[in-house]
Length: 471
Image 1 (tube, rainbow, N blue to C red):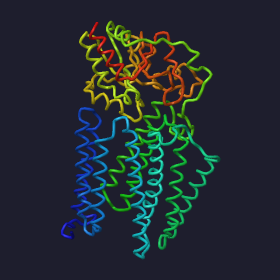
Image 2: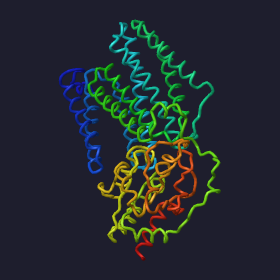
Image 3: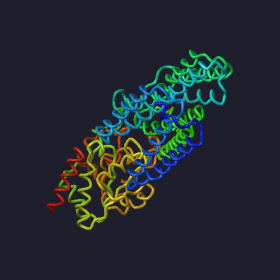
Image 4: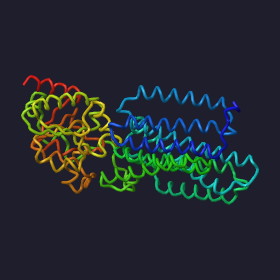
């Protein structure tokens, strides 16, 4: 195997290959910003990762080939099975899990580097020790926090905020303890305590759990994005410790893009990141004074919905997580096809936080071959809503709730929404009158221009398409 070790760590050849790798990462990221090129961008980034892995394996001094081959085999097998079996509705959980694995890997790398430094018997340079400690802390927080996010999205634990008594005090104590331990290890870099380092990993793990547990399920998309940024930051720190150019650049890209996305999503909800982390919003539905039984609403059939749609000039479809759960994107596309045959203009209104992760709705509609030109962002479509004949809400709830702009006491007050209530008529396809993921009732259901079509979104859309054909 030593014949394969032809590159020197930090040498010109290795650095050149790493530059090729992260250049492909950047190209792949750019291609991934548009649905028509996203698949190609993913493949370009995958090639970049292959180059980075191959370069690392060819470095002089690489050993433990048996473990490396086993790890590559197990990881590749798990990744392949997951890519085939995981449904699009479970993709947010998969993103959280993969993100956590990245953070955990960085924390283990940091531990390994510290052990290597201790075994060398010489002072660990501060330019290596400090990023190693940063990678350990942030990577551990990201790993355990991402696991909690995964468990909430997968309904393995309650999605409601879960807090322990004295939560904030405990968090502060953990932070102060981690900082003090890191300072001690930095001062004693000639003989750092491995036990103290393990204590840092444990404290960071507790902090990761305690920070994410009190956050409700409705805020998980923002949390996942933030933890993704943390993982990138920890990877970049590990890159500095290892003097690995590809890891530094890739981690920086992930950290910066994750931070930008987090801020954009928080802005889309008219909330600060601090409010997301500490407000405990987004829990399980709670009983309210205005229960659904006390408020009148209109229920219609698929035939009624077909008649409303068939005689419209403009129709706007608003997809949400319910569409993803029902896998109704193809059936909705069939409805749109039937309407377009009649010369009706069809558009799709996409809210920035619709679904459980950014771009969720875009990917689902792209699967159904919905033209990208028909996808309209919230800021673009809202001014056209008063001129829209029929708005069809498919599984979207909180992002269409008029309480956000009409009720200053609502938990979502001020959050920008798709203003479907301004349309001439609204059809809501939903299984029941239950609140959405944020746990609050949707005033849209009781508006005089709103009709409720109850049932599975996929079957309801198929029935509507069939009824339109028969008109």
